[in-house]
Length: 422
Image (cartoon, rainbow, N blue to C red; front, side, top):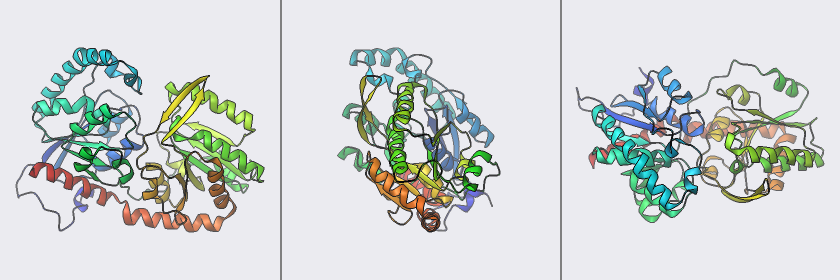
């Protein structure tokens, strides 16, 4: 029996005998990395029941397209070109209304017409966009082609009301990854939104060894992993301050080491420079930034605690310039992955984190932007191997009970069926 067939419950309505599967086009606007949101979509696409025939469209070649092709999923590339729409990050948000109007006419309209043709020729029954950027690029074409749209809200909506309205109107239905993310929608958006938690399958024990981390553990050093892109809203600066507080409490580099695994995003060079300066100022020398890892799971296998100090909103001064930090955390996949591997987690009380982590049972949930509270939670786990083990066991059980791939797929499939019935 195939993995996708095994996910169907007896109560799920099966397609009529001999009926052709529905063709769903999954549009992905961030093609570079298989980071959290893309890994969560991949979990869905590769476990759909036979009544769905998945196809993937990405805006550029890269790791994402390669991953789907290796999995045997049809994947095509259709990008908007090298203009303003072809860029990434949030630079487009800083343009004026007049500039946006020019971009819409010169770039978005031609791309919409090309994408409409692709959707029609592919005979797709539904277009699933994976984030707000995907909704901006693909939803107009799907509408012109007469196809329904499901829009995935992967995190708190970090933009203003105008862009939020564009996203909300793009989808016939909105799938939010958590109640916390869903609550950032307007009343109108809420009426079309449903929460479906991301899911995860049991992960095999990684075969790869990391001698440098294994050596730390052999010496009795507790290793704390932070799995996140190194960007301001992920809060690595708060982790540095928590590490400094722990050193003052006698938990320095001979007792605890921190390993940050995540993309050093090129556009965030000022933040990276500030982190180096902050570490030197605080005297913190037990934090290692390992950079992007296409396969992060060997790192999970070598850490004792997982931490994610994200914030929703904060103001920082970087390179002499005040920066308004707006996060878009939703349902961090790193928490699911850590708990599934039996690792206790420490997260912040934003977005869907309190829905994931049972505070005091599978880990700790602390206030965001509070290094002292972060240090307190980490200290309890660093000092007690017994607490780490019990919370790790509870975390694995919670993931298997509440956040399985099967329940994730069932929830999204119900949204598809409602759209097709409607």
